[in-house]
Length: 401
Image 1 (cartoon, rainbow, N blue to C red):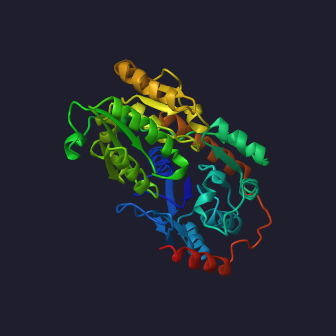
Image 2 (spheres, rainbow, N blue to C red):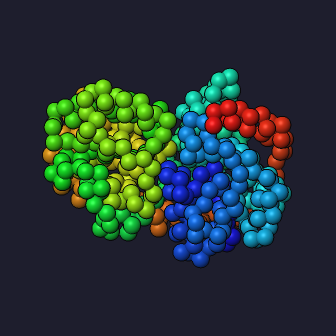
Image 3 (spheres, rainbow, N blue to C red):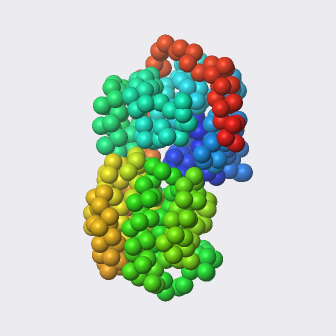
């Protein structure tokens, strides 16, 4: 099967969607399929990716707003005999995927990775859409494809509430358990001058508003003040970094808080393994891949059980799940560290038994097979993304670059 995945993010960018695409491609090709990518970036050694142009996103320049040429995508797909398109973004490239679906008369699968309504604040006024508009757009898009893939049951319920009528299959992104079970290659504590005997808490992800980092910073600051041998490792970058740095500086804790910036995904296991506990407070995750990666690495987790995270973690199986309550989170950090060895063993076993990438890709393969059997779904395609609108958007974003 020749599969085309279309996304506004891919490696070497560091985020859950890029990781999901990379792992799906890797494991699908292990099953004998050929996978091609359309994205604004690509790894140096990936010749099967068509790189499309884009401009850096104003508030987070690692990401790009893509303005792709539909004809080039069509030519790339035709050249490689694409039989099915799998979109991972309903916006600009998602529209291109719909056009490709119509032009080539091929089936289309879409993974709804992101609760888009929770990310509206990234669109600057006066262009910020209201929640209802975002939900209506999501419904409109998802009802044009053969199958929608949701990472969790919680997100499936959200899409159903929006009015999505097409089949929704729940297929989480699996974990490459072999990768995270291998020994660390780098001494992370030595790299960042963190004492070998320090109690090391870790967060990984974008440093952005939707990750609830103000909450997390307050809880971790309290723990650092109560334990002078504790450190906090923050892996990632984003628009909130300066504010977080200032917060810990104002609290007199900056010497025990380390910011790494972006880290390549293939190095992440070394950071998890160097840490005693992974802490996560996001309220917007469709799945929360990092919490499973931490468990697979043998690092226990304390996380708020909300939306996608509530669906993937099982309290006591390597993780302690908490409410949106700072006192509860703080107490859970203490309890998790006291039970660290037990939680570590249980977490590794839990991921191996429930979240292996092999099992997830087998289900994805089945979805593709069913979509191809159903065939092309025709629909009316209004010219909602036209050249003049794209030029206006480019002009807007360049004001912030």
